[in-house]
Length: 193
Figure 1 (cartoon, rainbow, N blue to C red):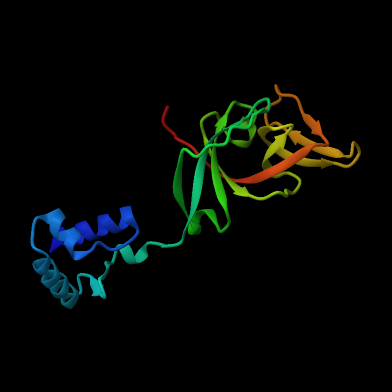
Figure 2 (cartoon, rainbow, N blue to C red; figure 1 turned 180 degrees about the vertical axis):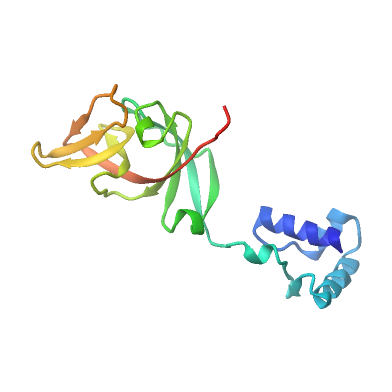
């Protein structure tokens, strides 16, 4: 029974659904009818809830099923703007409880112009897809077909967009031709070297 419980929890964590009795049987090397009888008995003992093929344990009951897909699209320049090369490396699921609702994509930071904002070379930056930004937002901006990650400001005196690097060794960018691709909402970083 403990093997079935462990397998069901692990399966649900990896696949976001309950395993079929045939999947449990194959994994544990027992017949499907035996798995079914064990699940019914485990349900009666309160070890898990088994109803209409759905297995819920004390552990899996706490899982939030709400996730949003996000494409990992490669890198974005955190230095001077870089030619935009958009390609999907993989898709990941972002839990709504941690990242909020919306349409997201993820870019790998490339360079050191945003270190003052806590974004270092190699960090994964979660971007909410939108074409508008507020003063002070960190944005992915498309400037003359080149993407860059910078802090966004509207410069009313110069009547243009001001893209501010968070590292004093980089120049400020002032442009009248800027397209916002999204706003940075989270940074995922490794603490290992």
